[in-house]
Image (cartoon, rainbow, N blue to C red; front, side, top):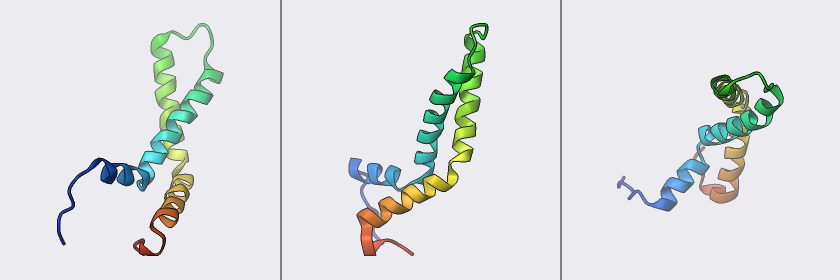
Length: 85
């Protein structure tokens, strides 16, 4: 099998079909939404950073199944019958 050249479209499709990229995105969204609900005025900057990172990791670990579902749907939509089993 020949090596494929690394192009921008190859990288974008790889990111689109990788469940971890969706988990990272959903973890960041999870952190952005829920961290603002947790913050109180007495939490300083370092506390906000720690809480935001912690919420992003919780969001990453909680979104494994939805990320696999999204990836599967994109593979089915884009690749159709040519997708690997």
